[in-house]
Image (cartoon, rainbow over all chains, first blue to last red; front, side, top):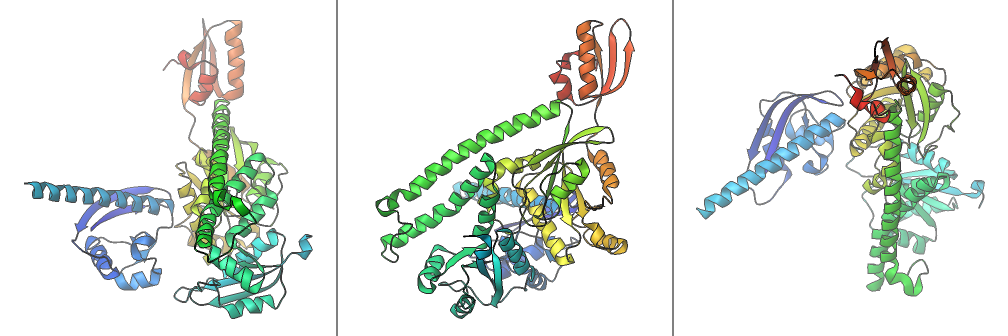
Length: 110
Length: 414
């Protein structure tokens, strides 16, 4: 499982500046909210601001519940820029996952 | 049935783990009125989803005590829930999505709008018909819609009709694209009015352009795009009014209205209209829904937010509200389409946010053909200066498309 954290400064319609991109991965046989919250906290450690994630990634839990689980300010994407940032993180995590899997396949072949 | 005979009871089910949303009922009531229903009462219940009736049977029986023609549910109903309520309680039912479709089909006047409504209806029906056929095969429900021997092919008929409508709509979309290209060549900037339903888009179009497009205080008055010309501080603009957005719409409905919504996605600038007189949580919810819809439309052009109906609040309250939604609407324009307040500021904002026209210098021959080309340029571009030398040296501001249309793209000096 791969989690990508994109730290960005945004205005409602545009991504103004991307500060950093961080990839974190874990091997897990099954997914639960504890594992997801752990990996999100690890990926966002030291990054200031509000965490934004897709509602499907957090089992559609209400915002106040996610806030109390993460212990950080949190919201689901609302504006166009927030959706763009989440989409960017999705692309990065997918690419990261492919890289990790390809690397693993190559190791196994060797 | 006359509209005063159409009576309904509104039902909303809230999930136990979720925060109560009082605006669901208000919105459903507005939609029911727009569809011509007389609302007898409103019933809400907080409980988990009932797999047989969506809500508790007792609440439905309470609704039936008012003897309505129809029960209107806010929550989506599955085919088996519709079947159960109809057969066991003997009443017609509608959910919010079907209510919206009913309004659309009443208001659709153009061929394009009618096709879009039919496509949305079929996209909704297709999986439901498949599900009903599966239930019939298992012997759990009898046949439906009196189709008799044709039941089995009904699903494939629907798919075939959907494909035919899609191809017709894609031709309409191509026509729209050609029209937009032609308008750009004529030197117009395309501005689209978008926003939540009943935000006052048509009224704003009327006050900006002095036209008399149908505008009413009810959701979904406009279904087909309406375009009017406007001159904003020297720029020629075509303002297009579009269908309003609404929260929690299924994705296929947006897809069905793609040819209409392309007026928004292909515009040079989008005016996002919101109703500032709404209570704060509702205003935020509507702005979030509008942003989601604009995201679904793939809007890449600049967005200017207009907080309309500012005349209903005093100045300080309106400014305070605008400040509180600044994370969703940066530098909004406070305006009132009815009183005309803020429209000058809006025009100024429009001219600032539209991409500045590039300056070109072209050379034209000093012949009658050259002079007629020059007179055509007066129409479609902004002339800065003309030097009458051995040839005509024309300095102008305008789009490259306008020059290409006049066949002057080769005469460019830079």
